[in-house]
Image 1 (cartoon, rainbow, N blue to C red):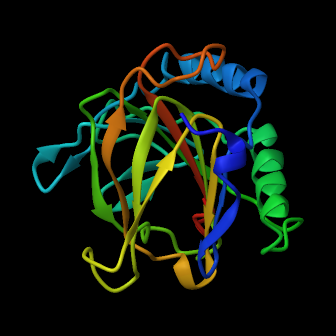
Image 2: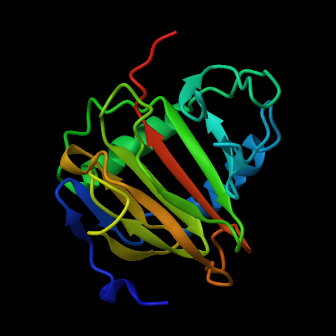
Length: 216
């Protein structure tokens, strides 16, 4: 893998910030331990059905349960149980992430849901927009485990122009403002690239924090 000196932080598009190596190995391992707790329920990770096809990515939700193309407190498409509350520490982490970019006011950012996705080495994520939220506050994305190819495009369509980035364990990616509705996806995971000490021997965990803008 490239060193951090070869992977400088950058604004890859207006409002979209990539900050490599933001989480320490200790922080990554702690979050992986939390993921294993979340995966025990009350709602287990599942591949959501999109147009009748099961996603290869397995998702567990916090705060609000996401299903195409809506949010609810209960996972009616899984087992009907209410999802776990959104943790206070993750609100603080999201604010720290926004502050790190230098591009957004962080103090009022209050994410209330997280989609926690697990990718094995065969999992993919097609180009899509995160548009099921009422709010257009920035999305905060964290990567842990195996590196991946992250395709970040435009807000008009799934095709070009787009750019491919190699997200590694510990990387932070924030997108909002003009890039909030940019299409993005994961065409490839690189097996065997998770660093020792991150808490994950194989696969990739991606956490995306969002502000739903919903009440109730």
